[in-house]
Length: 413
Image 1 (cartoon, one colour):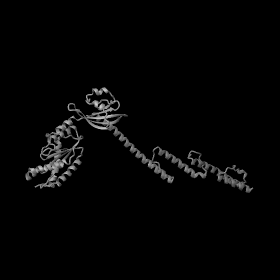
Image 2 (image 1 turned 60 degrees about the vertical axis):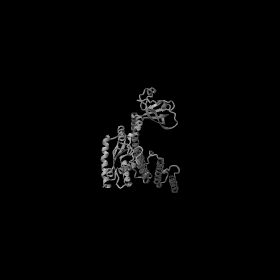
Image 3 (image 1 turned 135 degrees about the horizontal axis):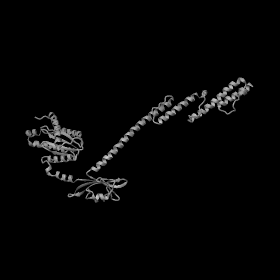
Image 4 (image 1 turned 45 degrees about the vertical axis):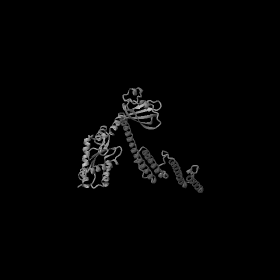
């Protein structure tokens, strides 16, 4: 009988360890000395079954399954793992909601990976917020710029006309009071109506971009820039029309001998005054350099007026070879000159004239020293608007400071 008890218990234990299905052990059938051991094995069976079910739930990610009994010693570590997974799940949800302060310190290598991930997510969120702010600011700037551009376009003196390439209707004109209302009769009655309107409406040139002129001396001169565009999904031609009548007339006047200095062949004081008057009236942005030829009286007195004239001509030759075709170079006095430079900042102009001064001195082959002094003034739309007299006075003050330095470097007898 003792052997039967041992064999029965051994088979029962083996079935527990290897998860074999056998009938439940009836402890009462065992002899009394073996009943206690049988009860222990029955408890072990229940603990193993509970552990297997518990591990199956955990392996599948089911954290809400049946919880093992408190006295199941086989599931102590699994319970700790379960608690960690529950807390980690909660932390993951917090991270998903944008809380990147979550920190894990109880899962070894996984902790390091989790903490690195949350740090990277936080950094990425910060970058995305910064990018979003930049995009928002750019969008605001673009919107404001578009509003400004529309308003500036409406106030421009030139005509901006867009013509549908197919039906030849004017679909936009900056002279219209309401650009959304396309009324063909408006252009017929408009006080800004152009005499060559039909040329614009019937434009057929194959060139994508062309600058052409229209009009005559009685009606005025116009420069038209025409190019192909897509306007609200339709092929169209844009025509920018500028009244250049005054420019043409002024060009004719400025080319006359009355505006030239006979001694040097450059523009004279009359030309300079009228040109600067138009610059200030139109609010153009230019940089003016006021120049004075140093020691001309000394050369005239000691070497004769012929040498004085040579001195002037060499200076003018240097300047003419250095200024651009868009610059204005004029003689406004015996030894006084001005250079008007569009679209150049003061610092750039000062550097340029400093280099010219060094070149002028270095290339001198006469017995007497040569140099010139200069003062530079920026004329801008923004800021205090000065008269021509105030501009010359400001430049003259700077020029005399330059002259003082020149006297120290290039003394004369």
